[in-house]
Length: 322
Ligand SMILES: [Zn+2]
Image (tube, rainbow, N blue to C red; front, side, top):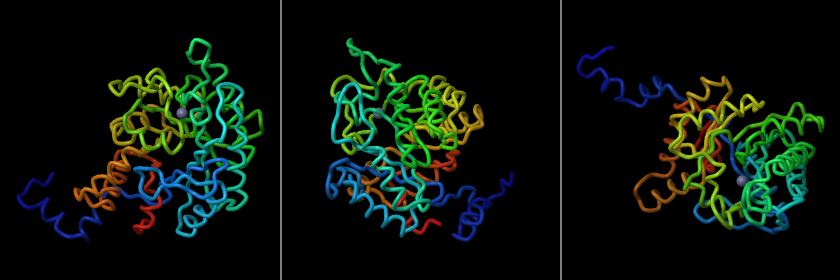
């Protein structure tokens, strides 16, 4: 190590030197833009707290994606919000309709991941089907998740991304996809997902706030490290092709250990509360939003995230990211 006086200051002095020696880079190919499609809605409405992010009716979503595609945004995570909710016998036809409309319009110009969970579909807002005592009915939940994944794949989804945190769901979804002839469709598992205060704006967008209780009996306790890493290991063993930590910034220490333990590419979801926090800082004049966004994305890449799901994917592209 060169510990001579000035040696570090010299190398940080000009932008050329800082760029030349930067150890971390990323481009739009690493970023995934969430898109909310609300079945039966016309037009769009903004999502409070998330800046330019909107909830779109199905045809408005196509117009929005067309603008994004023209700007070079390729990777999307679809959240399909049904117009009807229930407790059992859920239908996922809205999901199939949304996926096939997007894939028919854009084909391979977009790479479409589909979030698979039940919380937008259940009237109680939990990510599971509940039994009569209010506990999780795991078998019924897994069957519904498999059905949703197959519906998305039948409609042309490029990948499915289960976010529910139920035990055994990756293996079950893999089985359902394979049985439906979709061996080629990858599973990106939300494999280390914490119970968190940072999901607030999303729950409005996906209409998925729990009507009673909370999700601490299936999401991971933020104080746990072994449970958090183990959860991703289990998903990898069940056949997940990609893993993910969520929220991104509060999981940053876990990405490298998960990759090391599993050998599976692992990404991070910069969740709605994190993104809203950046916007709020900028609104108060405490930060430059564009620079703050890029700072967080660089840090996630530095920590080893193979990909980042972020409400800022569109924005990062607009900032001149390759
Ligand atoms: Zn959910």
